[in-house]
Image 1 (cartoon, rainbow over the protein chains, first blue to last red):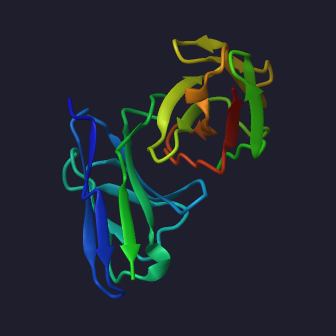
Image 2: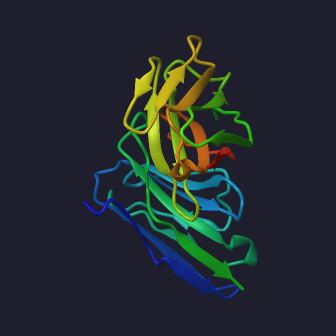
Length: 112
Length: 110
């Protein structure tokens, strides 16, 4: 099993551009989520999903969209990139609320 | 959302035990207590989790207070590789909102 796979590892965008961060898992996780981590800070929850077709907002959802058309994939879309979205983005998945979360290796995004 | 409170930082000497505290006074009866750690330049990794009873695994032990309003992560012999940010979080049935907070930065002294 590859676990939770994030692509790309690094990305540079210009202000106003849009892009999609990919997250795929092969561990049959019902729960998936996206976090952002700014330098020297903790993780903040952006969006999460408890199953295919079900998504909800986290702590900092503005500027981001998600969808969950399959159990395996949970892409994060930046609609119009802003410098404030420069951060490291982590995707995580888990079987249920009483199971461990498994994290991807992160995507480092820079918006100029 | 259930919240946790942790000290910003702690220090330990190498090869000594470390007790990392976490307060969660608003915990609900079915909330699980999870601990994760984040090594420098890496994603978070799972350490341990529990509901009511104390838990042990190869990485650490989790001691949960009888009233469940606090817990302690115990590293039995700290090594330099244990230097990381440790996060205590709660998971709630039906909501699945894992809120991480800022964690405790553990520094291990040689």
